[in-house]
Length: 118
Image (tube, rainbow, N blue to C red):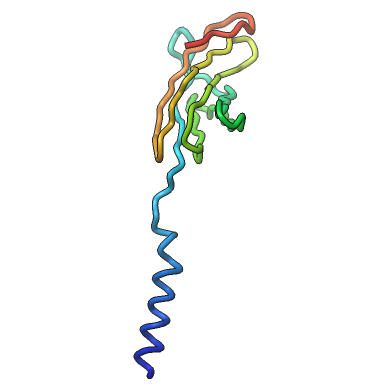
């Protein structure tokens, strides 16, 4: 009787903990933002818009000009980098698959807020 209770408890423990070891199907975006002189730019807002759902996800570059936007659902995205005093740069038709880790590097040019697309 004692062995069956122990075996049952062990089985329940394995079944409950199994999802903790499974991999996520979410994708992530990361990269850097620099200016025309290749200097990395902190404080840039990166916006990833899921074209199919309209859901926005944002990130901001750190002191080394690097950003990371984790936990994005697979799909097609429009990704923009924006900072006052620079032209906004946008990547369209960015396809993120299951568990994809996509790197997009931006180069911003000084000037008005006209939008550049790639």
